[in-house]
Amino acid sequence: MLGDYSIVFLGVAGFAVFFVALAKAGFGGMIASLAMPLVAAFSDITTAISVLLPTYIVMDIILAWIYRKTVPYPMLWPMAAAGIVGVFIAAIVFQYIDTNYLAIFLGLMSFIIGGKFFVIRARQKAEPDAVLDPSVRNWPRLIGLNGATGFTSFFLMGEAPIQMFLLPFRLAPQVYVSLLIWYFFLINIVKVPIALGIGLVTINSLWVSICLLPIMPLGMFIGKRINQRIPKDPFYLIIHVLLVILGGYLVVNAFAQMGAA
Image (cartoon, rainbow, N blue to C red; front, side, top):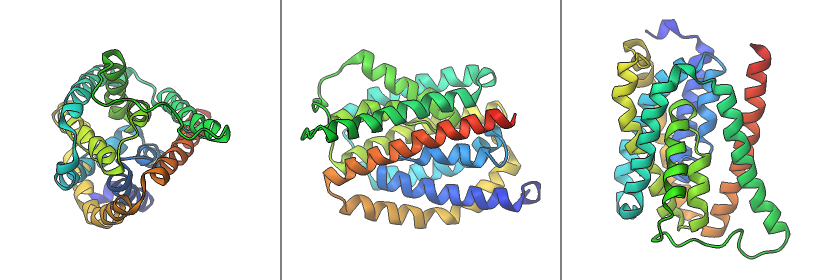
């Protein structure tokens, strides 16, 4: 059981659970993508997924209930449907994907999205981009970006594509977070039978996940308090700062992993 995992690994996994709980409750998951490669750095990507995925499911169930009243469901359903298709494609090609190259791609995407925001702000524009109408469906954009999120999330919980989709709508912070929470809640539920079927989640890894769950409520409490109190403009400023940090970390970590191989 726990004896199969080092103390360092368990400590890092515990920090990751707290970190993801805070990120999900406060920012809809922003910078939660750092958790998977962080834990994988002390084991491997398969072990990281097997330990963290069950904790994500529990977080998602709790947070989906908490944020259920602020979800724009007509906007959610097509997003989730595209994401679920992406998950199934990822499951099919799982054994053929080099996650380091995927991390570099996601990192560059995150860095570019965040960097663009600050370049435009430096030019003293009031808004970073034209605000899109959430009721208008651009189907290629919706399917492509949300499907890519479902695909990448199977490996790294990568969120750059869905951030590219959602940020131009400039939604209220609670609506933005509730959409992300419900999107990942639905696609993570789909991952459960897939992960069990291909042997990603085992009895041993499940025991580790259960032991890490008591760390989760504190992170969720802090994240929820942040989300309730932060105004819209500072919220989006923080989101883009986190995107730059996330992008830089993913790229640097991926190159470090490739150099050590």
